[in-house]
Image (cartoon, rainbow, N blue to C red; front, side, top):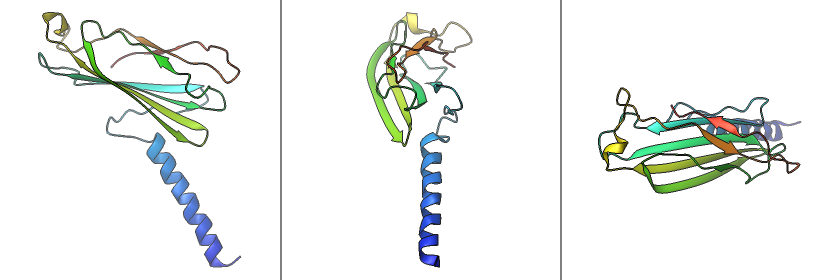
Length: 148
């Protein structure tokens, strides 16, 4: 084999590794789910965790899953943000071969005293459930997600 085709294959392999690292690697949050042998992996983030009165809070849940085992598009989440109102909601999906990443994002706002953090100035929300279906159509046990 000459160097040309070998070099092309090597460059292609490097690009695949880099693309995978970008899709599943660390992002600005420093907390990204990593898929192991589980059906799916999740992470959550609240920013800021200690908001000032009236300051918007951004909530995010990310899920990474193997599309050979979990039905694409079957993920459902309905978090309870208490007195906070959902001002904006966004859901983005990114596919990389058999692995998908879904990011659920909410911009929350509240201008009442009920939103003032109770413990050490930290916003706290109850656990939420991420429901999904397996490839055979069965409902799996929902993933329990704790907010930071």
